[in-house]
Length: 194
Length: 194
DNA sequence: CATTGAAGTAATCGAATGATTACATGGACT
DNA sequence: AGTCCATGTAATCATTCGATTACTTCAATG
Image (cartoon, rainbow over all chains, first blue to last red; front, side):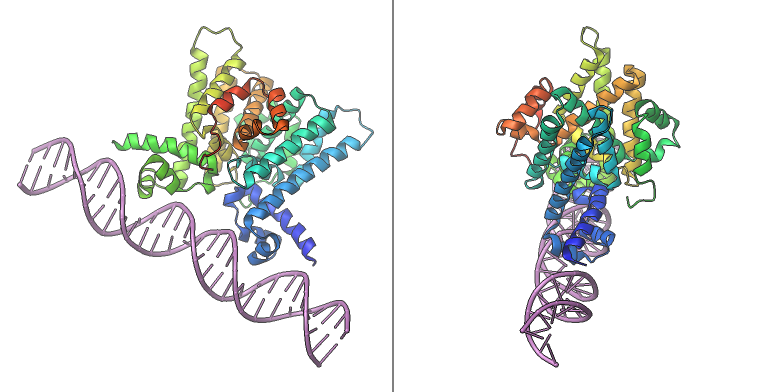
């Protein structure tokens, strides 16, 4: 396999591992095993754990904006732009760990290297929503806020409890009637690497 | 100093350290130095790093609900309940790291011990907003969502950039006209332990 | 005074982990 | 055949960090 293909596979695995454990909690060995290669090879292909995380972060924002762009340019659809962007966001749940990796990165603003990269990623998203999607300030704020709440529910693995706890069931049913089904279909259940 | 007082001091320091670095990134030694005691003593007073984090998490939710309760029962105020709860939320910025610690915890849903505790904390907040504050489902969702977005901006330390980058300045001015001032007055600037 | 127990630390241990080094394998091209 | 060079791994190193152990200090109490 070419090193570029291998890099792509490792990147995919790294989304899941960094998403589940965060930057500090994840280990290069875990990423390596998830990608089916040895730990030293991960380090060799990406230099350091830090630059691997930067690559994952950048890739996450790229995929996010690509998803938005694709949904924007697909013509036939009478739904509101807001609805369609929401769909594009939830479609990315197929890339396991992407949303959580972003949330983790957004909490590391104080990190000397990751911090600036995370801020830049956030601003890229913000600019895209304003300039390319055409959201006004209030719409963009509400859209981002709902996205962050969705990330929280994914990160909390609330879905796991939804069938067991009546209170949580009510939370979902009343609060996320539409979102819930999309999330629960894609988000890892139980027996995942924690 | 009594061990209970010491415990309280360590808890306060732990909010800041866990908030800035996350559960895995934080070290018991850093918490100890921030609290002015030795590392073994932190471990002795709290058992393990894990149970220290659980204590911090529980304390954060307690302080949050106490803040909401206090604002609820303070009579004279013609503002909307939503506004007043927002104020209570921002007042808690004085407890450095509290919001970020919550956000970190909410990303650890897959952790065998922290996960259940984090879910329980989230549900406590949800129930309080519904049952005690009286929010309907949509209001509660919007309130939580905005809170998560605020946490994100704090975690990103976007405030640090607001005076330097014109685009970020615009983001804040248009998107968070009121929130911004409150956040920037309290959130750590620059030279913090990252 | 002697004792006891709580507050607190220095020294250190063992496991985990990111990184490095040295080596193996196999195809491409003279 | 012989030489490279890219892909990949085993072994291992150095550091970090949570935890443990064995102390010290000192106020209260009988």
